[in-house]
Image (cartoon, rainbow, N blue to C red; front, top):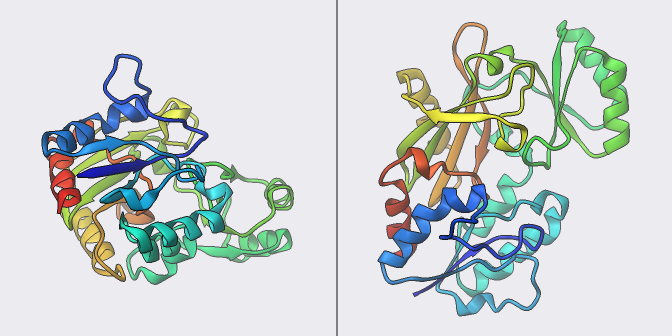
Length: 284
């Protein structure tokens, strides 16, 4: 069985398994080992490499395609081609849906109040109407906190929207990210396998390790488990893997902020058995 863990040329071909592996390679190392233990030949081609024969793989699993948000239309077209040629996880229709954050509108679960911003001139009235002091902007096509902004000055936000262009979601800033952290559940084959708590460096809000954030295993509350279950029930079709991300509001209630179905870090280092479960799904 030939399995491709799709990456991107920006990342380069992975060298999973050696001492010089990069952080994301080490994180996926348990998955690679589990796949190889099941007889799979694993390679790491780039989604944007035109020389790759994707039909030659039995399964293509999207992993480190971390520049897709810069080429969203091309990436979705690639997913559609690959999905027509072989088995793609997650499926192309899910990828198309999940690469624009308007998917959040389709999920009937508790979320921070959100205003969808198309022009810079919409920011100030939205803030005034809701009385938000510190607020948060996020591009509707984006990843790794790129293009996000925490602000308490509307003019700064207006300049940000004008400079970057595109559409944004505007939300109140949830300060709990600084002490409670962002929490995530990893769902493999419809089952929550493990959970993590991600903490930014003091004074920051970004929970990616690119910015020095740390992560640790977490135990979920009943309210958090229900949020995850309700989110997964709302999906248009089943998925092989998912990461559900949320913050708590000032009352301590979980509020969904992201559902990652494209190329999330799955924190296998915190979830014994999760990589093996995904490998079994890939094997089919």
